Image (tube, rainbow, N blue to C red):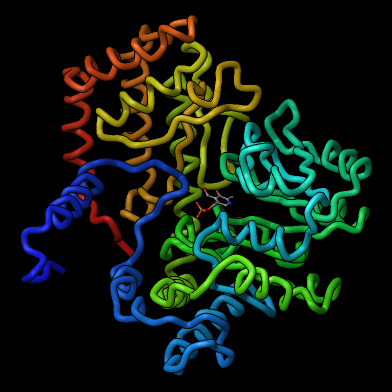
Length: 443
Ligand SMILES: Cc1ncc(COP(=O)(O)O)c(C=O)c1O
């Protein structure tokens, strides 16, 4: 990778260090994954040197005969994998892809509905004020019931009241299965488009580990770098149901991606998506999807045994939310930091009805795609849960001050002390010993 004339650019040393960090630590961030050597190799290929504005056979630049073949292959493989008639693989990432769907289907001021961020929805699903979707459309947000499951009755009541043009069914911090059929019944009743954002669960949908939205939604969006295990990117699929509702839907989506919101596609990403799709079509990927859920369930039961409380008491998918309120409000911040010192990286997250704040949340969001890709199984999940339990137990007296003004100083001091804490560093050595025996990509 290192080139003669670039030597000694410190960037190469930093990349090496990051690789070491990933190998020595255990990653539990549910939106991350490691991809195969094949996926990674095309990302640094000559494909990144080519401009290809437009779509296959309709480009605005010459010299795209081969790029056309690559993009068509990516489309065809995804059409086969998800059984859809149309796919756009050009969105630069998930947020631009959702913006493109919203731009294609709505006019400024139209109403859309999505799951609130505080209930596990994504920013691009209409989070008010700070996002494109929340600023340019009238956004109505739905939430969860008392069991931390999506409140479908509330979704229906809000839809009947506000008559949205678009309903988004998708989540970023939700441990349970989505019922796309129920969403479709509500969307159909009010004549709305249904967008299924399956970014987190694509790999589970592709392997039959989660209900597919394809028979129910008009449009399906997904990032390609989470459970799908591909490059950072996104795809927008138009279903047969979508084309039946609006024969121009595919054209509207394509025009929203380019030229409305983007320029030239990143061909190296397109090629990597094509490779990830071929990998997902292999029988081995089915095994991978299954193991992601088995690992999540093993993690859930071992965490409960370690005395930790889970939002909704479990998981149906790849993700778990640990409710840390029994240890004090806002405790997610301390736990996430202490775990990082102990060699386990996860992310602090709000829990439903968060009592503290998004900056000092009371939960921890964890998931199994990364560790499953490394080849870890149920017995490693038990060890990981025990380490998490030990870390929480070790820092349980480290309470966030109630006064806002004192919090920053407390955390600064906490971080300084934890960075050299012997108990955490001992766990870090144990984590490293285990992690180092697993490659980053074992499939
Ligand atoms: C459900 C969902 N949609 C969209 C996105 C946005 O993807 P990106 O970060 O690639 O823009 C995410 C990212 O976490 C997500 O979880």
